[in-house]
Image (cartoon, rainbow, N blue to C red):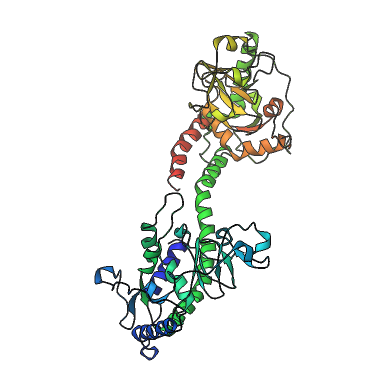
Length: 491
């Protein structure tokens, strides 16, 4: 149950006479209603209020729920001045020290005043409605916001706020809780008019069936609600923390699984699968063959990995390597032939930027711009091949995806990770690494820390990767393919 549902339940119990016990010595609602009629007659005689047409009797079909025997169903207009003419004050008569209340000054649901302004602090135009301390203030505009309160002082407001009095010393706060109850909320919002600015009509409010308890019971109901509200507030704080935890839990679980995977803790090690050193030697042999065939360029030796750099221990059969020792890092084209965005179109050869990446692949939607064949031919660097991994190194650092088409090109904010050793190294293991907390720790280590986050391709080449034997890589990928979808079901 949400905090709001709990609060609604309490308010509903309150107006049904189920929140506090009934006490015979407190009299009946009929006696209170008789006193109200006498008071109204006296005020009519004193010409303080006008005599009004009697409101229709409440039929059994209108009564939404049973109430205690000593309670009474009445019309809201019978016990309030909601439909009485409201005193107005012209703009010329408004003094600067008057409290000027606007709807935005009232917090939704709670009805708390969140901003207090004098008339001198606001631009006042036209007549305003005057209200007095102790009156109930009801926002008839967007009533679902439940901006309802008892006025703490006198002031002026717009005509969207209806101030009214209650007869017979009826407890103002009981009326506020009644108007905030889920029953009233449902009735009023089902008959509001106006699409953009829904309002509740005066007739709806005046004819609203009102469950009237004896006066003393009203006060005990209010006292009980106000006794419970701090507990609801505490419950709301605890509930919000739990909701935050629950919302983060699936993602946190994924991160934990990925971290376990690259630490060698997700699957067992098997001696018969060989070692990462043997695998790395095969990669170096293949790399030399490709260099000899001029498929890739010979690179400068990377710095050795020191013990201080290693962020955690890995199994004996694993090995720490740098990213460019197992993938080739290719920059995007930054030369004179780099195409301006205005020269791109929606058809042709895909030209990928960070906005097209979703962490898995390239998103094919209206954001995907394309090169012509002529523009593509002019590019020197950054040409894509199918199954290349694209990584953002400026702005959305680390955002990535696998390229699914036969050819394409990348923007200058991206780099290509190309695996020339597919028979030796599992590309899917790279993708797991790119999702892991370790990858983002490496980003923080090399990020230039400016307002525009930026990595150089040279920095990316030096990222640390824990390398398992090939067979273990495949078992890790298979295990995560089973476990990671289960995390989504936790949401």
